[in-house]
Image (cartoon, rainbow, N blue to C red; front, side):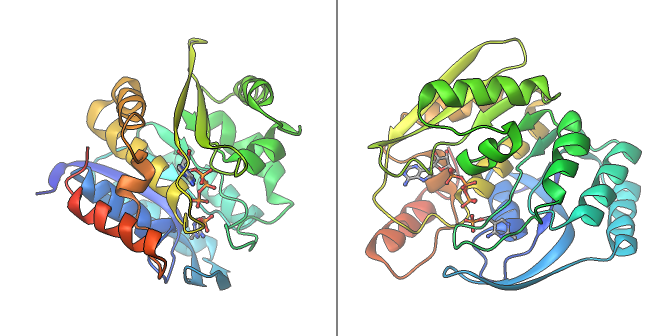
Length: 277
Ligand SMILES: Nc1ncnc2c1ncn2[C@@H]1O[C@H](COP(=O)(O)OP(=O)(O)OP(=O)(O)O)[C@@H](O)[C@H]1O
Ligand SMILES: Cc1ncc(COP(=O)(O)O)c(N)n1
């Protein structure tokens, strides 16, 4: 089923619970019929409840994984996820500059939904200064957008302003995710394109706390579509259309697990929609 001629790469941390990180990325890309390679930059011990521990990979191991992938595969698009700390961000930036891995989606993972810090505080500046200028698309959630743009976000006008600030830092396209606006009846994401066009994509908020891995799923879906299409036109059209569905794309593809009825319902939905959109 997987079209092995289209290959994409995730550069991220693992999730032993299987719901987020590299695991979510590989499953999502496979659902989008794209072969997924992975450079693991950190290993976490986690489950749907939280992150119990993590360890960043040594630079040598990161470099070797990049070299192995670049020497053999034809990567058409790549994404970054959890990047742990300053040496890891710097190692990833160095390798992204060294190899041609296609357009880059940066999902600036900082704090897991369970509260664990997955990017050290001092690495935020490194991401802002060194990684953002390499990004074709940046997909922060609201707290990440606030950190990177250096402002508080309260409502839609602030989301628009933050996206413009982030674009001014060198990112071409920005998608700010609204999943954390829990008081709102809708989950609304804002997309600002390179040419200045912008649009909102909204969907009814699903009443669940089990949203582990939704952001990874969204960014790896965009990366997979970028690998196939070579431009952001199709991924964004897909995002726009699928948000009209009763459940947003992230949920339809998410590896949402859990014991709650909602989680099981979402999981069944994912399974029945396994072939994607
Ligand atoms: N409760 C919800 N109902 C509907 N859509 C949601 C909900 N929570 C998140 N989403 C959607 O899922 C996607 C991911 O958004 P979110 O803000 O949760 O990202 P995130 O915090 O980076 O995710 P994670 O860190 O868990 O991977 C967005 O498209 C968002 O609109
Ligand atoms: C390895 C890894 N990458 C990303 C996340 C963010 O996902 P969430 O905010 O849903 O915990 C995570 N928990 N673990």
